[in-house]
Length: 141
Image 1 (cartoon, rainbow, N blue to C red):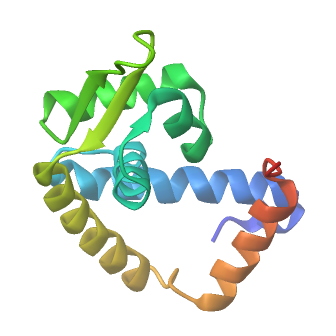
Image 2: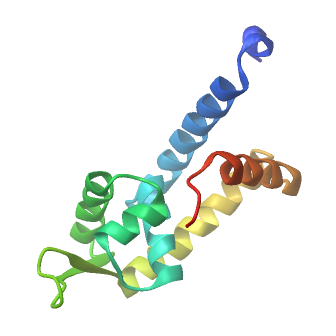
Image 3: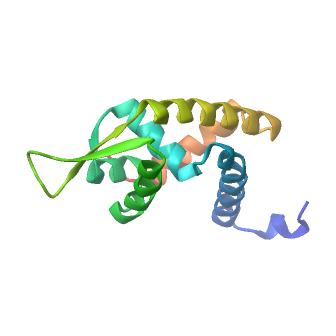
């Protein structure tokens, strides 16, 4: 254990923990060729269906350029498709493919194993993190 952790601010603890968890997930997810950002993106597409890039970025809570880079990697692996929006040629309609759904299932299994083996699956921890996100995250209109 790092002895000075008691001196760290809560925000530093949260950001450090998030980086460490994401790094650990990325190492495990490499076996199926995606990153944690890819997992999050695929999960949103599975849940919400076909989306524009702008709406996807909003739901993932990142900038459009950031989600664009993630989509580039996912599209190269055949996990998503991007088609020009016929209603607005400046935007694209993004859809998860069947290969993307299979990768998402494998990734969910990896995530469950990782969370369980690291003791991070507690409902109390999930509830506390959800409270932080709801209190400090973007407000819905």
